[in-house]
Image (cartoon, rainbow over all chains, first blue to last red; front, side, top):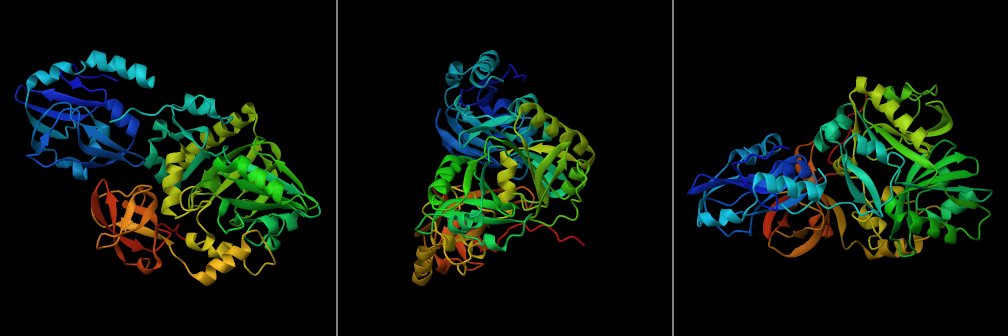
Length: 129
Length: 381
């Protein structure tokens, strides 16, 4: 699986893409593959404060429910409303199907996250994929 | 996203394990067995589910167990340990039934097949194999009847869906179209003599379950032949994920969920498979008493009317927020495209149309009691 180099990754299988002040967040291709057919996402409203490492929502496939963990702290600026009616977009292209955009609280938090190469290594060790 | 759980190394494997891995199936541990949950090459769970509703799907269900009872008192034994009336079975006929504890709760649910004049085969659940066999053996001691655990002798494959009959007919001379639902035949199938082929299943669709020798070579050959020939009929391999959503749409009970050692027959709504008029069976007296006492809870079908998916174990609340019951199985229904669940609730909130709440991660989400089965296959014209 190719993991775009301009994204940062968490060990909980979220990605974050920052343009400096704001960042979009989604789940990785590995995550959508493990979940299977995604049928439901529960996301926070605009204005919600997120704390790095804390649960901000859930994603559900037919067979499982998974929490979403915030890769960084910030305030929700925008929610991808399209996913409420077409959650399968996450299965089709996980790395472009962003869930929320946040205004970053501290850009330095991103330094602690995994690079594409490190994430790929992590996933290979974890799941044997 | 938490890490995906890997199956424990101690899990048992069916004779088709290597084939599942080769096909790239996602494997999970289920009741001590490492089983395919879905096949990306089939298009995943939803595609597998739809294939069974509209064409045909193939399931490895070799984790299921098998107990044979044979001898002059085979019928008396089966009658003593099961709640349905096996006395009504002709040779070649099968019935849904259950083994009960003296308190009227479930040891397991089973399909009883009458193979011969004095020969029966009980097909039992994977998670209760040892418990069931011990139970049957202990409770038939006084009868002139041999009890054998044949669980490891068979690879069991389910061929399910409206096209199942056409597909399987390619492999046998037996007239499958003439075989009624819950009847069986023992003939040559895929070149294998005396193969038990039963028109049974756990999907709410027409279909068959075949019992072939469990050696790997035979198992793999038959599986591959069915899948290869099945392509023309839209056949795909299906995992336990689709098996669960299919049985849930059809409101079929799953041991450990809708039925268990703490739930009785009346609560589970399985009255029509429990024949109180037959002379005697384990659990009968307790069920008589329970009937006189009246129900404290009953199994109902729920449909979510607000946004949310009910899952196994979630709390059911009354409109005013009192906890009144719990969800036994809940999932999105791929064919019906609704979020459905089975749940235990008090009889006073069990009427169709009653509104309830399901607690989903702290939120109270609206649901409505609806008739079951949620899905009923169309009658053949």
